[in-house]
Image (cartoon, rainbow over all chains, first blue to last red; front, side):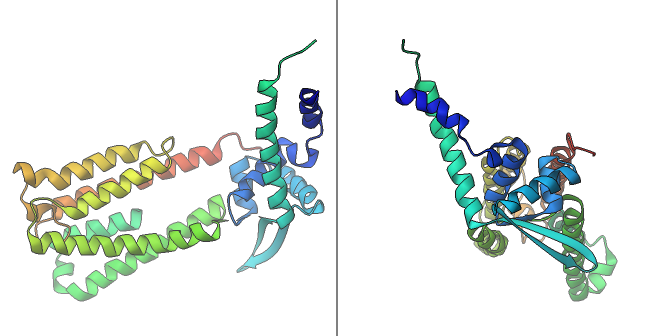
Amino acid sequence: MSENNVFKKIRGLNRTLHEPSRLAIMTVLASCESADFLFLRRITSMSKGNLSSHLSKLEKEKLVDIRKTYEGKKPLTIISLTNNGKKAIKNHWDQLEELKKQSSDWKPEF
Amino acid sequence: MIPVAIYLFGIALYRSELWHWFTIWNPLSTLGLLVLCIAGYLAIDKYYKRNFGRVTSKSPEQIAEWMLPGLLAVLLIAFGYIEFYAVLPLSLSCLVISVILFYFYREERSLRQHYLFWSIIVFLMGILPIFGLYSPSQVYLMGPDAQISLVVLGVVLLSAGLIDHSKLVQTFSANTETA
């Protein structure tokens, strides 16, 4: 009955991470040390408000760290993954790969 | 790449003695050219940060990003001297640049197909003297008659830089949410 578990596992995926916009943000951040708000906005093609709200959610879950500084007189927001975030996104992609493998091997048995 | 291209154009101008200011104020003008290129690099860097944001690579990649240009410069100068003093029938420095351009192509094939073309152009330029189509001193990086090669290298780097820029603009401006 392990096959059934595949679909249970898909339903049990972390919803905070699995939402497409947040998955994009987390995946970008996983491939670098840090990025600023503008870079994330440009690379994910998200609006300021949308990106801001997703970042707040990720920060609330302690998956990202948001540092607000200044460059000269201009505000600068630097975002990076927390250790929790690094583990979570790696685990999420590992899970997706594993689930893809398991689901493609699955055949209905009656 | 664009500041390096400007530097190569400047050196070509100096070698061809077309720019008298260069020949009169030789040490100062070459230093001035270097300062101009550094200023150009800083201006371009500021432009990209302002328009596309900033991203910091992971630590090992950061070290490589800082060390690689220095290593390549040392390598090119070394090969430039070797080919010049050993009077080789080809340009080692052109071959090194060709390999570097090919490496850029290999790293990101989907975005950098044009690097393969530039790599072949520079490679061909480097081996031209073997077929008697060019004298070696015209393709040595430090060669006294290398004006054309320097201009070709400058055009290659300038074109590669401009194509990269247009691809970056296309990638970043597609489907941006406006709300």
